[in-house]
Length: 434
Length: 177
Image (cartoon, rainbow over all chains, first blue to last red; front, top):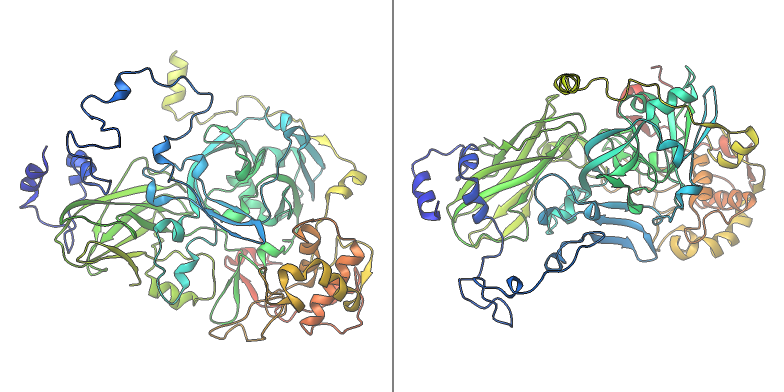
């Protein structure tokens, strides 16, 4: 279908909400057309030169010579070399910082492993798996030590889940909206498949005492990162992950062993896991007291804020992109909740005055990225694009004003308010607060 | 074939449950465990032998900590360890050891785990007690000559000891569940 025919077909359809939002089902019928209208660089006109060598797309040189041979491990096209994690670290301690997942360059729901966000407190350890042990002790009937070879012989499970740093989006607390790409504001979240041994199996083997309420997990990195985890979560859906997206976990994500707690704050998913101690009380580690807690206006701080709350963000169009002309666009974004499945995502194009339901791309999985889409007809005038997720427990993503009213602006962690992108008449997108 | 189909149709609820998991964990002795277990609890359990005071800590701080944490705990690239004593309910509170950290034992524990970041694990227990004492002292929490050790450190009451509550009440420290 041509662009013109598509426009004619849609000309008389009633909007789903103000300022050009259309019925989400249009996407299903005319998805291919929307794909062509996405914010990708325009293809060159037929016959136009695309390089210094005057390549003819109708008869390109790569059809006249054998291609490259097989590779032992595939890497992205060199033409995609700008799709990278952006690093923000302390120059004095280069292993203390983050790298952001480039959400604005990605589609679908799976984050490529090499683009999964990172947060390290003192670098990535180079661990010899043959010398790595997992020790389980404390309030247990038996203190046990496991080698990696041992762990590989246990039954395994997979969890396809998002993983989000508690500090993701923290610049949302700023007084003024930061003007940066969606990834450098919200890119400390990624999604992938983690496979390993259900933690409950090993806890049963060690024999957890009735008085144990917490499990203190410790990593084998250069800060021996440790946090306390309620024992119920450990028995519920915790996984001792060995594989990430089908291959052994990459070093920066916890090789050779990572504790994975679906839906819970990133820091608790301890990388390079070496020890689990069953205890009656939390250990009150630095990273569960002075950090990863949220100071409220009352002067008291929220602690043990484990669950990552209901959240969504429009990834296209978003800051840094330009709408070249008025017409049809697909609004696309990500939604997730640490409590379960995303039930709905509403989108507004008029700054929250009216909302329309977006289409949720299947599969919609618990504690996993959900991709949402909705067609939009930009009339060339001012517009403000917003998305608002609700999960299956009824927990709805708050407007920023409501979140700030409840939590103040000094909490630093767990910012999950509605994100707003303003479209100017010039087609440029800006980050705004609504 | 029919059996496999049935398993798929029922969502394979018995995945992996057909055989009991192996029991491959090797017992680890108490003596060996002590080499692994570095946890320090707020009541002082896990603190090692040793002692140190703020005066000893001042010179250690200068050589081991100041490059990142600044002279007397402020003004460099790493977290400031002391600062203004603005109340936490102010519009612009100042969060640091003296205003925010709830437990002095956590200070010892984190220094032992992580510091200095260029060479974690290189400080002796005496050194860590001394640096901990120094940081407490520059926050006006202990006197210039107070010794910090396994007995005294857990007794230090931090100004923000009662400043935290569990977002989920069932996880409040000491709560029954």
